[in-house]
Length: 342
Image (cartoon, helix red, strand yellow):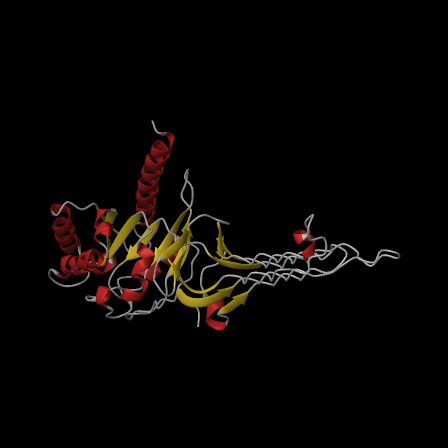
């Protein structure tokens, strides 16, 4: 059991400690004043976005998380200690929802971003708090407040610059292994990749980029057919969609393969069709120049930017790297421009 991208879990903050009823015991003082201390605050439950985590596997085996309760107050005006917080580190890109309503509570997209999932209860007040000019020996104290508790759902959406999408056996895993240091499982049959894979591609004169290999989509994926539905959410955050097409497929199949992918993306989220998209024809080592020119013309005629490669033979990969680097630099420049307000 490796990749887990959705889980349900329970959080319980610590209860506040109780206030104390106590009086001073002093020699020759028949009625000492009140000196009951306050109870300590219960610990909070925090979620922290950790860029080093890639899966929710820990939630598969542990679904209840509790912070420490506050300690009750005691005499001599001694307040109870606050309960220790419970800190859960979750992968960057985690979306936290209320398990009952489905309401999105927070989207953890920044490294070390912190969210308080449950707040600890306030400590109760000791009787020293209730002394007045008319009641100098109050026998009243309050109980600590209970800490918040609730069921939450966590969904992981991978944060990547480039999303590799394609039908099963299009060669995505091979391409990812050639472009990055990732080592995904590779075999010449469909559905080899059963979980999203991330790789880091280093580009000359530019920042590295993260590439996500999304498991093969098939027709009907948005309705839950095949494996694609489970992982469609992972392409929502990618800024560039790289459609990998098997150019060795017969007749008009390459174009039809693209149309299947495009329709699945639109059915899942129409906004995805507005992303920067790049058509990459793979397996050019298996076709002649005439066939490659024919398929390239089909896509170019439809207005797509097309690049031809052989991931297996590492043919055209440097051109692909350069193109991706230029596209990412353009997008990053636009973001900087928007932030500067110029």
